[in-house]
Image 1: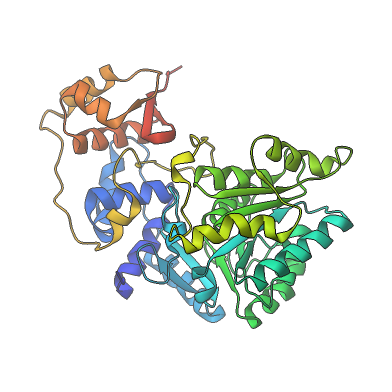
Image 2: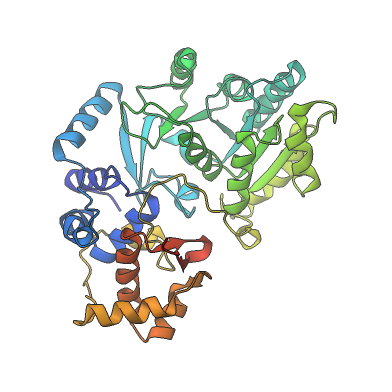
Length: 398
């Protein structure tokens, strides 16, 4: 698939719309067949709830594209040849990623290295040795451009290839002191990846959102030094949910920076004391043709977190690949003419206990498309809550 310029513009406009996140985007494309049709339908779709959602303006997107062009940033869409298949396979893959640098860097087999910002001298030394060894083995190193472990991993991997995933826009590098490191990565043939708009200053919850892209791009994630509440452990959890390998470097039980990594090892992460410990796990995944999405059967139940204030339409519908390969208008089946009666039947089938969309369709006798449509309206009205595995529950009203 290759989007036209007009389609890419519409995709960007839809994902930049308030309360439209990755799952919402997928749901809207599944329902309306194209981003253009979803944009046309969104205002009327949300009008009855009293919480109308107005799509991002064309002028806003034109400004973003102009700012991106000045930095040489381009947008890759799910399903396009240069969009990483490993990231596409994840449940919350960004519909569009903004890329600066070489697309080849994000398509090669890679391993993520993350860890403490306040890293020890030993931790930094081991990170350097590990990143260089992975590069010599032909693997790209992915990290988050943070101080400490991330920065050392990027610098050590410049020769072999490295990708930095940032939490803000391409023109808002954080920390500011790493603008020089960005230049080094680009000059070495690496890449910088962002999900957020140009001009976006990263906030606290943007970093966990970034972390799921770091793990999603990678065959596995190595955690080097992490306290028990470290953001690096969020990356490790995302890796597990995505069916990827998780590695941890052990440390002294007297060092708080090793508490998180030691916990990971006790929970089953692969202990890493030398680069071969990573390669012996990763190389069979590459040679065996499993790509970057091996171990899917062992995924834990995803944990819900408020990283997106979005209307979640994911449900049990198709994966993004089904929704976006052709972007062709799909027939839209409306709800029964007696909307109130159908809505009452659905409400009666809901309770505080999570239930799947298919089960709701069987219980109510309504088509799955109609259930999705009614759930959207209930969600916009703040009546239901989404959970993992496409389940929903009724929210109590005070």
